[in-house]
Image (cartoon, rainbow, N blue to C red):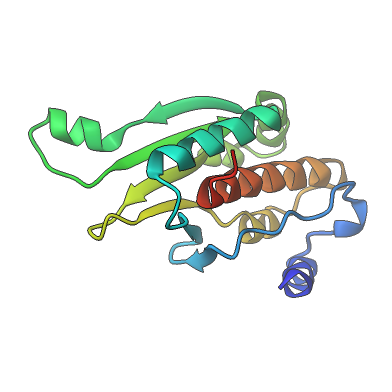
Length: 168
């Protein structure tokens, strides 16, 4: 899987020979999904709350800040509606974000990086985030920003994997 991913990134013009970091491999719980997203099933022995705690701890360890949290299902309930549990977590490294937006304002549309927790009708928790491999490949980053793009990709994939597997 890793070799296929690296080959695909080369095809997309994402030069890995400049990267100081190795590519973080997503959990087997994670698969590509529709609309350029990655969807990760939270392991059966991991509660939604444990997944959230794991993501927060991993982000803190990586010095990637939790800059926003939207408990969307609570807002739906406050408005008189009904919804399965939905929460959106926003993570960011402000210094990297500033450099990316300076390169192209289009990056502002992706900021901050989001991971959503959704509990389905069967009470199964899922984590969803942007497929950063295809996004970074489309970005045509200059060499000096490619390492930062890889760092963001690896951090978000590490955070969502920690949540899916319940790594505390």
